[in-house]
Amino acid sequence: MDQLGIKKLAAMLKVSKSTVSRAFFENSGIKEETKQRVLSLAAELSFTPSFYGSNLRRKNSNTIAVVVPEISNNFFSQAIKGIEEILSKHNYNVLIYVTDSDGLKEADFISTINSGKVDGIIMSASAEEYNHEYISNLKRSKIPVVFFDRVYDDIEAPKVITNDYDISFDATELLIKAGCTKIVFLVVNKAISIGNSRMCGYLDAMKKHQLIQDESCVIDCSNDFQKNYSIIGNCLDNLKPDGIFCSIERLAIATYHLCIDRNINIPNDLKVISFSSLEIAPLLNPALSTITQPALEMGLKAASLLIKCIREPGINNVVTNVLESKIIERESTRQRVIK
Image 1 (cartoon, rainbow, N blue to C red):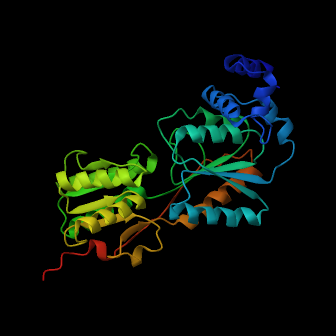
Image 2 (spheres, rainbow, N blue to C red):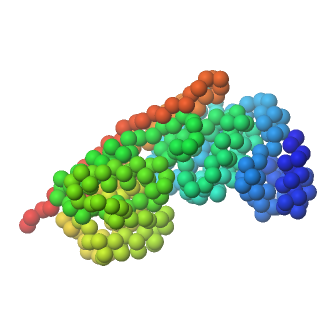
Image 3 (spheres, helix red, strand yellow):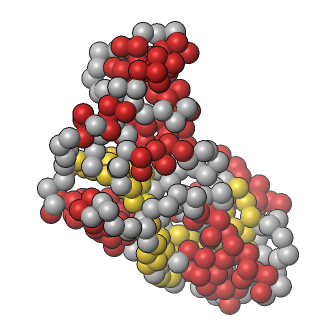
């Protein structure tokens, strides 16, 4: 046991060494507030008790942790379905951790998971702005990790992504060919890999057609509907766009609500396209044009890569798999109807 590390944590938190030790166990009989204080400091110091790397991992747990920013998004629901399909065939149980796109929560989860109670991790990243040492610790603990969709470029691991840049470039050109000259790009986190790739695809397409020279039409949004409603409303008032490119589907939903409330006609007054796996996209009024990722296939691939990493621990399986998204044109991007 790493007595020195536990002793240091206990002294810093002014608790006993046994309290620190028990904080790393589920159902350990300590207050949740105390447990979170211990785990948060441990994550900050990139500390993992060494006995988790030995005693608890003498036997496989047959459990895989899946860490995702959210599950309300239909993309992640489909990806998890693919993950579970593969893992169930190999008799693995699945634990799902939802970070709510919170980097600190992600760090806490990973530090807790890094206790030897799982055989591997499949994850989609939450936030670029934090130090990712807590993920690097997984390698030292010999817990393989596979990323899908949202990845950390500074972490060497197998990754399953889509052609975000190319498909965003094409989606922007679709709006331009439909007659749009003032297109705004709505994004929640452009620091995350996918947010940045999609933004760059949009910007390069706009620059190619000499419609923009900077990022003035990139609009930072949030994960909150009411905030997005206000942000997009201000965008419509101040920039008066004729096209909106949404980097994620919740921004398209907020845009639709706003257009209904303001009597803005889609697509005559405003054309909209969005990354989305919404099954009801064709049923919206008007039907939403989407960039649809192969979510199920990404889940299947990520799980298959993890199984390979578990079975071949000495093999370098660091590889990036790029799958193809597709644009589905619907009514929201059709050319203006002249009556």
